[in-house]
Length: 184
Image 1 (cartoon, rainbow, N blue to C red):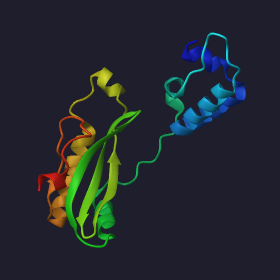
Image 2: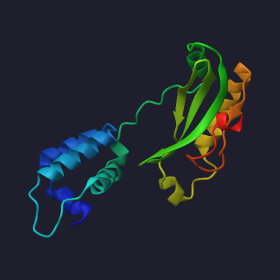
Image 3: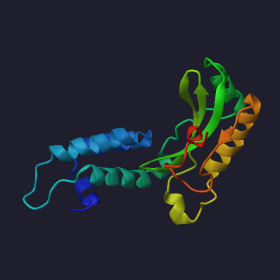
């Protein structure tokens, strides 16, 4: 059975709940709902139920079908004043600002963190994402706009606190790139 066929096999109430989660951009809740609904269906003699990956595909299809109606999540402030205030709320002075690639089932993002020595810790300041990895197929990246924004904000914050800014892989996503502490 295809993802569409499995979607049609789900009870109407489950499909409505999934669409409700999708419209509120609740991907994980939607996947869980599909997985639970699929597991509640009777098993056919030759067609095994889809697993987690198949359920994710169904939710992705619902995101595509409902794309023009999905309520976007508010983006937390990423201006230098707000992020500088967050750094200022920490005990101690930052040792560096760092930008790190991270990824999930939607694609790549850049996390901006303040690195502290005393005590040795990191504080997440912002997660910057400018769309899903569908951009790759549309020919819209590189350059990666999230990397450009992280460089702009990270550099401004680093100058403000007179610390280094480190971004080991600004030109392409690499979640295994060398970290600032490893460069010392």
